[in-house]
Amino acid sequence: MQEKLSNHNADLPNEVDVKFMAQRANGFYNNFILNLYRLLRFIVRRWYVFLGLLVVGIALGIYVDSTKSSRLRHELIVVPNFGSIDYLNQKVKDYDRLELNKKLISINAGNEVYKLKIEPIYDAYNYILTDPVHFEAFKVLSDRGIDIEKYSKSKLASKNYKYHLLTVYTEGLGKTDLSIEKILEELNSDPYFNKRKEIEKTNTLAKRAEIVKSIEHINGLFQRLGSENKVNDITMNAYPELADLLTAKEGLMKQLNAVDIQLIEQEKVVYVATKFMNIAVSPFLPYYITLPLFFMFVYIVIAYLNSKIKSLKN
Image (cartoon, rainbow, N blue to C red; front, side, top):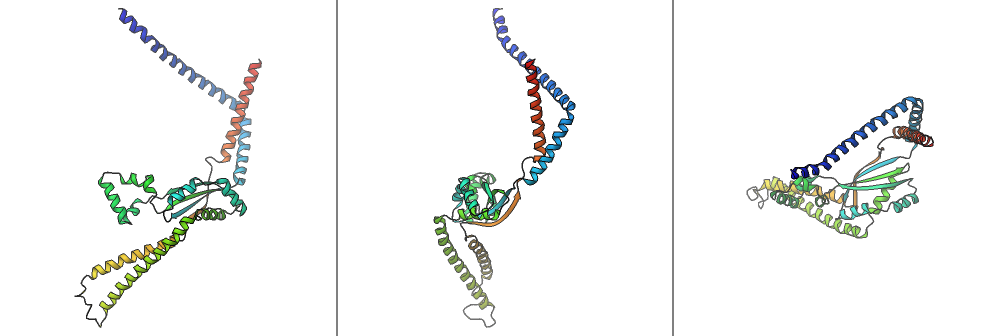
C-alpha cells in the first residue's frame, strides 16, 4: 500500500507539468487569435491610412527601382593554366575589396566590385575520357566501390576540371569592361606562373612540331603507296597495315587539334574562354513591394506603442 502511494506521488509532478504546458499553449493560442482580430479591426477602421501608405509605398518603390544604381553579375568561363587553380582560388577568396575598388576609381571605371566567386564547371565524363591516366584512376575508384558521381564533385576532384566559372558582381553604372579587365590583369600578374607560361608554351610548340612531322610522314607514305609509278621498296604487300596507318593519322589529327586549342588557352595564366556580361541582379523583393509593407509595419508599431502609452497614463 505504501509503495503504491509513493509511486502515485512520484507521478504527480509529471501530470502537473503536462497540465501546465497545455494551459500555456491554450492561452498563447487564444491571445494570438485575439491580437489578430484586434489587428484586422484596426486595419478596417483605418483603411484610408493603409490605402494611402500602400499607394505612396508603391509609387516610391517604383521610383527607387528605376533610379537606383545597377547591380550586375558577370560570368566568365576561365581556364586556369599551368597548375594555377589553387592560386586562383586563393586570389578570389582573399581579394582586397577596398584596394581593388581604389584601382577601379583610378582608371575611371565608374563602378565597384562587391563580390567575387569561383567554382568548377563539373564535367566528369569528359575529364575521364580525354586522358587515359584519368580513365585508369576512375576505373580503380569504381572497382573499389567508390561513387564516381559523388567523388567527381569533391573538393579534391573539382580542382582538376579544365573549366571554372568566375563570377564578378559589380555595382554602378560605369564601364564594367574596365572592371573585368582590371581583375583579369591582377590574376595574370603573378611572376612565377608567367615564367612557367613561357616554358610550357615552348614545350607545346615543340610537341606540335613533332605531331605535324608525324602526320607529314604518314601522308608521304600514302602518296608513295598511291603513286602510279610504285617504288619497289614500298608496296601494299610490304606495308599491309594500312588500316592501322589511317587510325594513327586520325589520332594524330585529334592530338594536333587539342594542341592548337592548348596554345590558344596558354596565352594567359587565367584564360577567358567566354563571358556573359551585365546580367541584372534583382533583389529578393523589389522596392515597390517592400516599401509599402515597411510603411504599414511602422505605422502599426507606432499605433500600438501610442495605445500602450495612453493605457499606462490612465
